[in-house]
Length: 113
Image 1 (tube, rainbow, N blue to C red):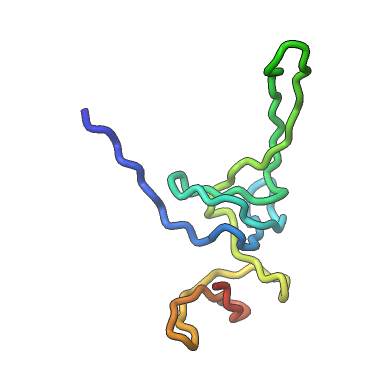
Image 2 (spheres, one colour; image 1 turned 45 degrees about the vertical axis):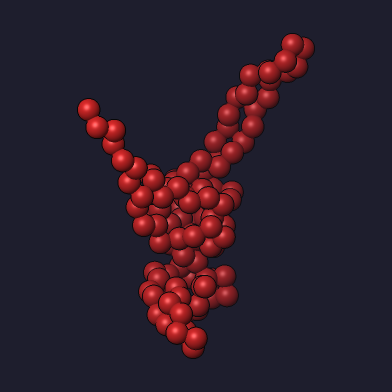
């Protein structure tokens, strides 16, 4: 039987982008993208979708601990956010003065790259 290949989906956000959550229990929260997981079309956002993890002690005499970490959410549930205008917007691709293809917010006209 053939081994399945990894499928990499195109995600509309990049690491470092500011996004707003538009669906789910965290709706309305704004944060920075920490990681993009294109294999599963998910993103990790700072301060959003916090989960607690119980960590067992590694050595004898050491106590266990509870750590909080950001869990990934689907990329379709986030929208790029303009910090200047305080509004979420879709993106389009356009050429800048140098002739380079850059991402631009549709509502505000703000260049991202």
